[in-house]
Length: 278
Image (tube, one colour):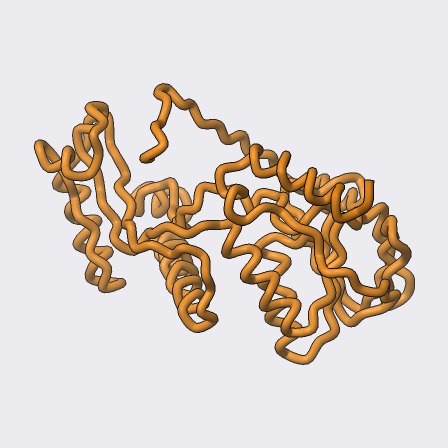
């Protein structure tokens, strides 16, 4: 089987693995000649790796991305599609754990990150199905509605974004589920097609001069003098600087980083079949 036929067969199989991949399946990087040296090497071609590479390439640096799989095959290309940046803890809980100043800084950073994403999508004209959906956080147990309203008012005063506290019959306007008795609707948390966003970012990075090598696992990383020596299945890459954007995919090639990762278990339970209209 020739390479093009093999890739086509892989594409037909891979689109069955993830909802987003039906419209934006993982794909290989464009063919390019191996290069043994660069200013900055980036391991990982997800959102983090691409954002770093694009910024540095536009600043005039010579950047190479090494991706173990196909572009879009990792978590960035198959996440929930919610531009959350949201914090699990309430402002009061954050303040108790970290102090009032830190709690405010966490919230500031989350709001700023979301605004920067929207600016990036708009300025770069990225085709990623951005939709202003808003997000409703449902509350199934007892809650302090007055406290939620105070938090919403404080949020509006600081950021100019007005969350809506929902209760009673108004909950039915946001969800058909009978579980939730109250909730908070955030108009600034919206939806994207994550796989399309990833491929759009890869397009920008390539246009900026970034070289991407997909299906190129890193076997080991060592420091020799001032340079990093990165051994891959395609050859050795020497780089003046190294960015590791592997997150949960960090393997034995980077033992120092792997020892410092804390695994987080995430699960979803689907209790009802969703029809095609959903």
